[in-house]
Image (tube, rainbow, N blue to C red; front, side, top):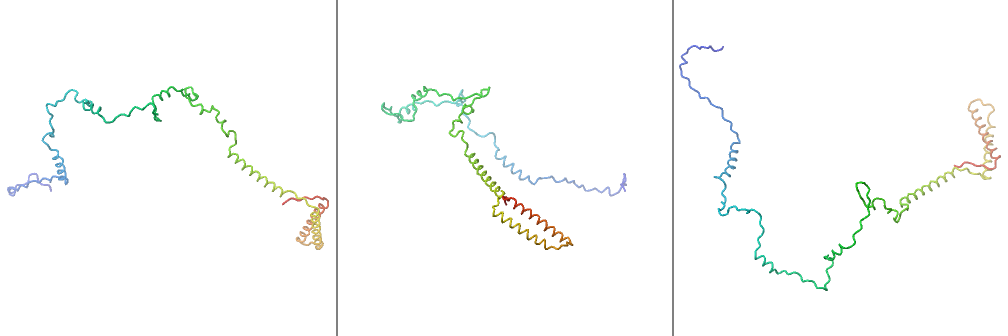
Length: 256
C-alpha cells in the first residue's frame, strides 16, 4: 500500500534524528599520474631560467659601421713584397742557341705552322630529305664499294658445301635406283637353262599324268571330283608352258 498524504501524528516524530553526512564518490586518479609528474618536472626544470641566457654584451665602441659586413680582400703588406723578392727559388736559365728543343712540346711556332697548313677537305655527303638531313656518302649505298671487294661475285663457302652435299646425296640415290632397277630387270635364259627348264616341265607333267591315270574311273564323292579337276588344271598349265618353251628360243624371266 502507498503511504498516506497526511501521516498521523506520532511521539516518535519528536525524537531528533542523527544527521548522516552524504559521502561523495571517490575521484578517479590515473595510475600513470606519478610517472607523468616526474617526466614533466624533469623536462621543465632543466630549462627554467630567470630571463634570457647570459651572453657577452657588445661594447659601445664596436658599433655597426657602414659596409662593415661586406667581404674584403687581403691587404697587401710590405712583408709579402719582400718575401716575394727574396725567394730562394730561381727560374731555369735561358737555353742556349745550340741546344735542341725537347720533343713533344708544342711551341708558338708549331701552332702557327699548323694553323697555316692546308685545310682538311670535307668528307663527301648527300642530302636525302628536303629538311636538310645529311649523311655520309659512303654509308648511303650510292658508292659502289662492294664490287671492289676481293671475293666479290664468288659463291660463298657454305653454299658450295651445301651443293656438294646435295650432289653426293643425288649420286647415292641414283645408285640405289639403278640397283633396284637391275634387280627387277628381265633375265635372259641361256640355251642350257632353257633346256633344263623344259625337261623339268615335261618330268612334272609325266608325274601328274601318271597320277591322273591311277584315279578311279567313277568319282562318287566331291573330294575325288575336286582332286581330278585340280590335276587336269595343273596338267593343262604345264602343257601351255611346254609349248611356250618349245615355240620360242629366247626366254626372259622377271628378276627377284
